[in-house]
Image (cartoon, rainbow, N blue to C red; front, side, top):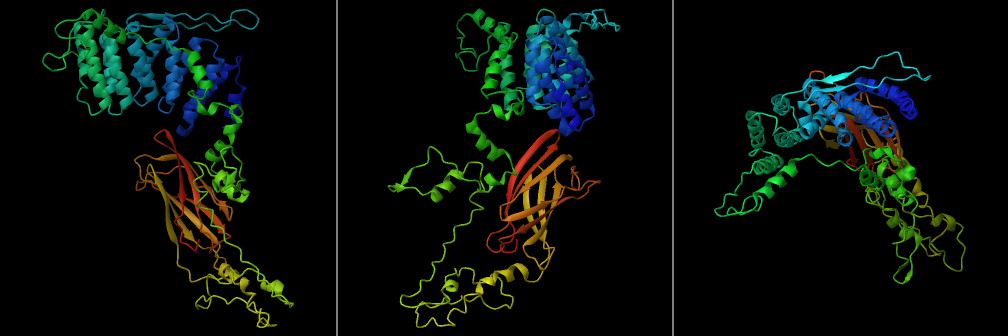
Length: 572
């Protein structure tokens, strides 16, 4: 991957053809979880350094034939935009090439089907003509013609019926997604207008039947498109469609008793005409304003306003523990009140409010309520207590959480304040604060492993098996994450991250495998990941983990964040 990063950053206008070819070659062999990012990178290179429009369109179509299943909708939309903005000759070339790619595909390249079906619907009339392209001979650095002869590209004309059959076969496949079927329905409606002067009556009737075939589809979107396109096709033919009520208006608002049918017919044909060319300047303005972009991760962090840098850092990074657990120093805000009840607000009271955010969900969980400090015992006037420095220590830790002798935890009596009763031996009970050391060293009997369920998301479930590796150190715990897959497909590229509060130290080992097979299958293997934690405030604060997992399921990247706080209180 480092070599690919280097290739990506070395691309310029002079070597874009060669280095883009290397990226496409790696796209054939790279794991599926990396293909989405690779497609986005190729798109950026094409947008920035493309030598001409034909090379740009040719490269994008080749990328869709290789990784159309994994490419993002932004890549598909960009390909459609560039084809729509090209010349009529280049549109014919792209449509012919996409039709051939769809015929050769097994129906798995979703992005290729979306772009191909859209282009066939928009420029289907260009498929009815022969196409030949003679590239310009290349010239060497010294101005002489290159040795390699340019190869001409030719496509034969296709009959309208064959075009319809090609798109129909795409929709008949069991694996055809609903978004491809929706675009195919639009394609059938537009082909009815494109082939009106070329196709036979049988082909046009078949197109109309394919449009009406989804009037009772289980998908509401398919029903709406089918009914609306049926009305458009009838209006383009000059047929009025009534809404079923006697004497009512038709679906276009024209009365059955009269009206200008030519206006309706013209409006229907205009709706079925080619879409207008997309204005890239509008897209660029929206991209600059942060409203729309072909790749969200392509912008540099330095281009963002400084006011947005702090919230983004606290919300996007799992391991930024200062913000996650509320440990970062509070920043003053303009909306913070300057006074409380008429007096100046203290900084200690304002800090927790300014440190909170919508993303920092754990700031309240891991912030224990403040323990009021015990007031020192003031010696009585008129005498000198030689043990006054010892009696002034706070007694809040005098009760041991675990009594090693099994006795009751009776409260320790506070030293008397009367100078007549506080004699030389009156301060003897004060050294009891050493009792908490026993709770961290000696514990009860071993109860065996404890199972804690962390989360379940899209078939991936994580649970922890918790044990104490050292009987003499109860602060240290060993958490073994058992990762299971209950979906119907393997999970690739597993990446589990963990964050802990400040009072917990953590050592995390890599998982035994980044591929999680379907649990219960023939080749099922246990995938585990070990985490070693030490709770330095055992008995006062419980162990809590903030988890972030990323993986690839069926070619789609999935990310999820969860909080695990089900550990037994006082033990972990």
